[in-house]
Amino acid sequence: MGTPRISFEFFPPKTLEASFRLWDTIHTLAPLDPRFVSVTYGAGGTTRELTREAVGTLHKATGLNVAAHLTCVDASRAETLAIAEQFAAAGVTEIVALRGDPPKGTGGFTPHPEGFADSCELIAALAETGKFTIRVGAYPEKHPEAADSRADIDWLKRKIDAGASEAITQFFFEAETFFRFRDACAAAGISAPIIPGVLPIENWTGARKFALACGAQVPAWLDDAFDKAMRDNRHDLLATALATELCSELIEGGAEDLHFYTLNRPDLTRDVCHALGVMPRVTLRDVA
Image (tube, rainbow, N blue to C red; front, side):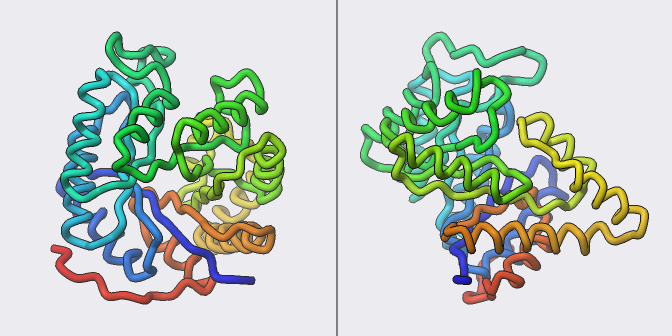
């Protein structure tokens, strides 16, 4: 089994305490030499400025290859592209382009009157600038708003054709879920790399709620395993073992890259990476 290339997702801090947690996360994970790290946008673009600041600071202070999330929500085309230009001016030339979730309580996604209608329009506009490497989201299980799984694959093909070079999947709990999706994408003519997204389970109750909200199927055996582990105070041990096993199966099945959703909590992700043979390679400096 080869050693995978890895990447991490962080979210921008909203409080001083959260800022310290983010820097602790980066200090813990940066020595693992990730291929890139991404910084999220909140629902409805609520963390737009926080994301821009975090991306710029991370890039400047750590030298990590930072990919900024950018969405279509609640902004005009001009405003969205102006943010992209700010990223480029700060030396950040990688973007994870997403439609984005609507603001909470507003129902479904409604395009801004002067905004991009969907992620494909955003991707095409970013690609036209010639300044960015563009990654997009992919859904190995049916997106809650999709008509069926085939629609998710069709959308992904449109996003790749619009100018994206790679896709990162939503998290899932069984390797076979990813393999079925990967094979279906290949059959549909999608040749761009598809990176499996992995969620190390820091808190099963929270992860389960998150999964149900985004359409990820929760296997009955997983519910049973965590119920027993929590009764026996073995939650973290089980979480580490399951994430490591999932990643090992993905690698054995041909995955060369893994993208970890860290939730700004680094220890479990670090332990899984170590178990996979990903060891510290560099020293992080100037983080304070």
